[in-house]
Length: 543
Image (tube, rainbow, N blue to C red):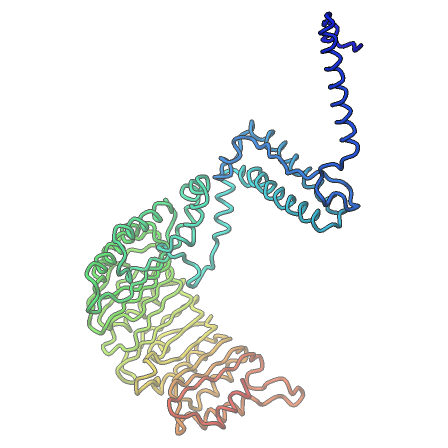
């Protein structure tokens, strides 16, 4: 009899029969089950029975903390309470990856490898999620993150790449504000310098909504907070007829917004059409921090005349450049702190510009670079300053008018450029014959030591040999002819000059006699019709 409590409870003969049958059935079922489990093959995949170690085919079951998806949707750091569960789950994933690595190293069956490699790919993706939310960058203090943004956004000091296009909202500092809320807050509140150097296209906004453009500019200016601004304002010439009225209104509104921030201007490059020039006098007395101002007036002769006093009160102004100004437009300048002054106007028939230039040199004791292209109506037409202006700081001089040269005494002059300011397409592009004698006398009078000399669009004569003989420290020498002709009077002088410059000492065939320290010698010439081959080849040979 079985010892089962259930069977012992059955007392009647009928019940005994029932118990026997039940017992036999149970024993038969258990036996059949046991025999079947011994005889039938296990229900493993076919690839397990290939001689490889037997691995159970199972997927990795994720057990992520419930806040993992939320952390992955942004860039906020996990709290202290979140860190331990996250690190624990990350360790579990890392252990699973190590286990799969080990299994892959001992398996050769293609089907097994495929399963394990797919599993490893999925595990690595999970591992990257944990690395993302546990990244130390998420826990960087905002002040440190702001410093990283500033360093990453550093741009060249000069040229187009120094500025970001304020309206290119998918580039520049705008990208920092699109990553997450934390980055947006840091870039908008702690990175003023990143937003402060901007290129603002004033024109060329046909088809764009005025409200959007003005809002973008105002936003960028607000993010720069109180930081000093470096601006490049480009006006493509809306003064031309046929431009859209609405586009012109947009341009004027943009310019007015920038002018309203003039108290923060530090460096400005601006090209402006005559139609907007009337707004610039509003700068007077409102540019206390301005150090550099480069202004191009895309103007035709006579568009703007009179005086411009917008720069009269500029106590920090050091670098000033005028480009393409009309002959009748005279700026009133505070030159006391100027270090650089440039003006490319080529003519001065009445001498107004000439007097202004001499006053600037006289009133700017720190002036180091002075470049003007003006020339009187005829040789000797402009007056010479009396007494001469002795300037100790001026090192770089670019002129084409002899009256300027004869008015100066420059003991520390290191670089001199003589070049005509007229466009090369005009018929007369030469300086007056008295400019080289004036340069020679300046060198003798000042006892300066030139290291760089450029003479362009100037008829060469015997004075060039005397000039070079006084420039024993010259290392750079350049000659330029924008309209070379086969019958050019400078041709024989130039040929003789090249021969003289190629002479070497008897003791050292590599040491030049006329200019012993010369390193760079350049001759550039252009002729719309023809270039003399023999002279051109000679120049190339000695370059």
